[in-house]
Image 1 (cartoon, helix red, strand yellow):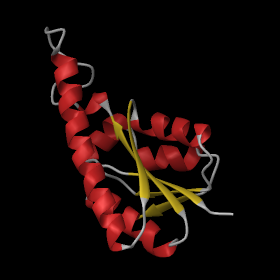
Image 2: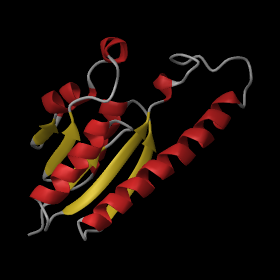
Image 3: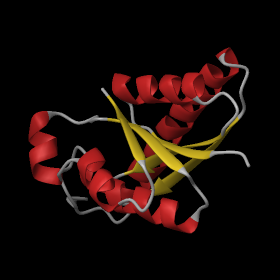
Length: 144
């Protein structure tokens, strides 16, 4: 039976390191790389979408385009390991969306970076990896 690994990534170097680690340690696994677009991390502040009704839609379209570039980079990295990956982009709060994704899928392991946010963001928003570690129904490998 093939091991199914979920690799949540953001734009941090630790996410890239987590992806490299997964690809090198588990060459025969099947990989799903997930990026969560967290609307709470907007420049406008948590939930602060201003007065324009279309402002969130514009921000989300830009965020999706940026996330697509991130996934293209992940696919390029996977080719260096002669491996194919599945990619997915979802919208929501990071930790809860990762956990929901795990619960809806058939994964055996999560491999993720220890953090991707600055200290003030981690204090305000909570540690994504910490929450996933505490609540995931499957093993979590954290890369630092």
